[in-house]
Image 1 (tube, rainbow, N blue to C red):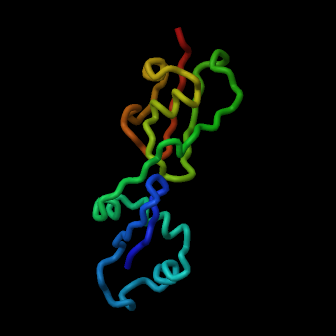
Image 2: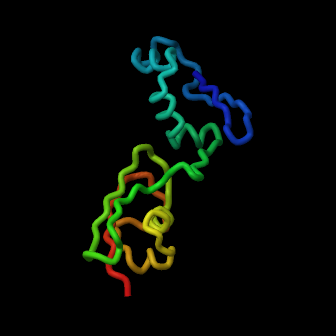
Image 3: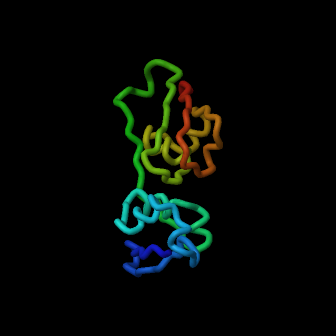
Length: 136
């Protein structure tokens, strides 16, 4: 079973192997139906699967695919400020860059003022919480 995909950057179409040759009755009927009706959620979940990407030698380009929605709270008011980040889609971003852009801080300032349980310089696609501490 394959997915035909088109690259939006170069407009090239590729065939990605999702399942090797197998009898149709060996597939889950709900999954098979999803492929037949071109279910967007099923297609998206397959394209986001790192094993499929590795097997078919492709990567997704997440450049400009995200933004941080922040409230109008000012960073010079009550301290510390607790912030929760939730992803609607599993877009891999570096928390350091996301926080810097969303809060209007330099990346060095992010490293000084942000306390977080995950590494700020390592890409993540899972939600996380961080605390902003007062600046000097």
